[in-house]
Length: 269
Ligand SMILES: C[S@@+](CC[C@H](N)C(=O)[O-])C[C@H]1O[C@@H](n2cnc3c(N)ncnc32)[C@H](O)[C@@H]1O
Image 1: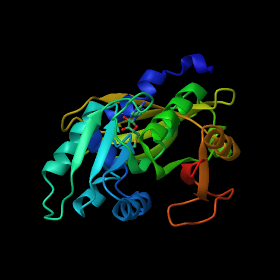
Image 2 (image 1 turned 135 degrees about the vertical axis):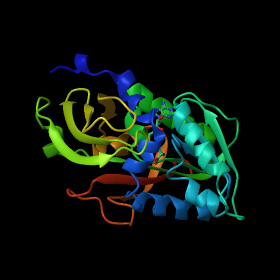
Image 3 (image 1 turned 180 degrees about the vertical axis):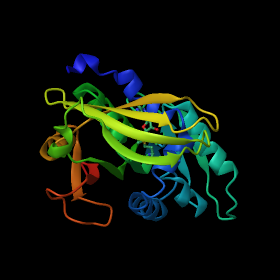
């Protein structure tokens, strides 16, 4: 399989068409939410979250008083964030302002003490040019002494080297959007030259109850960044990495770490 078979447009959008399923899929991913919530509440609001998605990372802090400005490409994800915000009952609720835009090019003409790009969103920067444009956006919105926080997956060779032809089975579950039972399997293919990983998530309905398609495949594309490559990219684009963790509780980055969490400032500060 060559990377000609990678559909990056599908890989940057299909996963974000159904935000109810997205939130369901990541409902147990709470460490990053706790980490970003603490950072958002510590920061001088408002702060900027690039690729805010459904608001999964931001809304807890908003419910406790943080003012968050969010940018995302996917209209359905933004609609979900707005809907969740509108339903928020907290009387301490802060402000949520959403913009549909591309984190490579968006310019809000405001600077923030905190800019973030959580949960692998930077891995949608498929080329070096995309990654550098995104870092330009961060710099355009970062106050001179402001902090930029991002996290991406560490390259896991065992996972990346899996055969693209072998489907790995997952669990059966009740789909929260279609209210029907589906079985799930996934395949992925990694191109070591472009560092792109294409994933195909396949869902098959177990019986004929409920709505939803009989079977459907959803794609997701990620570019992987190697730890030292990311340090270089940040350095040569004008950032200084203050701290680098291997999880969301301050653990060291090592060979077992799933994520790289980076806390940066502008190099000139
Ligand atoms: C894994 S989600 C992260 C969402 C949220 N921050 C979270 O933690 O759940 C990645 C998000 O990146 C968004 N995205 C992808 N490419 C983008 C781009 N060029 N500009 C803005 N958002 C983008 C997607 O629409 C999606 O909502």
